[in-house]
Structures are given as structure tokens and as C-alpha cells.
Image 1: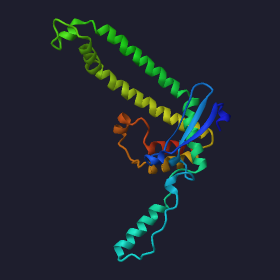
Image 2: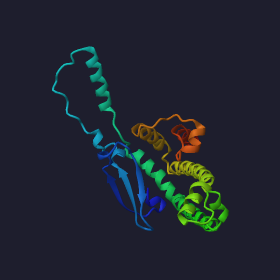
Image 3: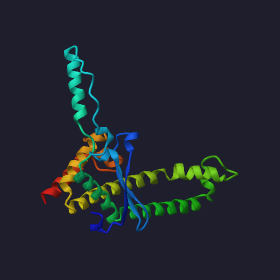
Image 4: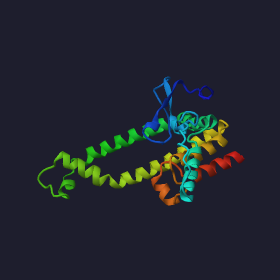
Length: 235
């Protein structure tokens, strides 16, 4: 799959993330022609240590109905496997490779650098303004550290809120584009089921208020992504 989109893959790693938590993830890193893909073991159904057989109890019978029900619940929990099948893992990787193919990483780096340049430029312009310090009680001096706090904590506060919202909107757009890219690779059905499994494994809540999620969530809510994939599959 990497070769089909000219992704310069050199190695694939599996991280034993299950030692720290049950969270599932996949990402790639590397410069130029030396890219690597990293998979959490919790993402792989056949690899996750959380799916290994647990030794059965000593055979003691439950003493009452309550204990019997408790044992049945535990048995159901044991039978629930974590992670995705190989086809679903490929669909998740197709999504991640979509971020690379569509230049999302480069775009984010460019935006970050432009924002840093703008912030330091405005700081250089504002640090010499006497009225700025006078407004905070510094009439006879202009301490640089105080100016730094005033400018970045107070002056830039509205700008940072607007920028954060714009970046959130952009990030959500990138996620939909990456899903669409995975669909072009023929992975829409597998990505659909993988998103449901990952949301369950990561203890995500599928329902979100649209206004709250629009402001705070860098990734679209599960139901929105599934709806988009469903329309893609129909087309």
C-alpha cells in the first residue's frame, strides 16, 4: 500500500503500548526518504497482549445467583477482543498515509512557523510602547520580562482563541480529507468498522454536542466521520 502511493517506507515498528494503557494509536515519522510506521500493539487484534487467554478459575461453583451473574459478565468481557483485524489496520494506515500524501504535516508546520514569526514581530513592535507599560503601572521603566507577560498573556489572548478555533476547524477538515483518501484506496468499509472498534477500545463517547465539539475537538466526532464514510461508500 505504501508503494502504491510512493510512500518511502523503510521500517515498521510495533510499540508495546499495552504496558502503559489500552489506548490504540498509529503514526509515521522520519525525514525525506526515510519514513517509518509505528503501530501500538493494542491496535493489532492478533498481537495485543490484552487478548491473550487468561487461565480459568479453579472450578469452584458460584454459591448464589448474584455470583453466577457476575461470572457470566466477566466471561463476556474476556471474550471481547481488543484491536483491529489486518484489513482494518490497513485502513487506519491508509488514513494516516493520507495525511502525508495530502501534505497536511507540511501545511501544519508552515502555519506554525508563520504564527511564530507573526508573534515575535508583533512583540518587537509592542515592546517599545510606553503606554502599554503605563497601563499596568510601570510609568518610569519598561521591564522586558513584564512586557513579555503583558503581550503574550493579555494582548495575544483574543488572537490565540481565534487561532485555536481556526486550527481546530482546519484539523477536522484534514481528518475528513484523510478519511476520503483511505476511501480512494478502497478502504472505506474497513475504516468504518475500525473507527467503531477504536472508539470502543479507547473508551470514547460517540455522541457530542455539535457546538462544543466544533470549538474543542481537533478530530470530528465518531458519528460525523461514520456518516461521511457512509455517504462515500454509497457513491
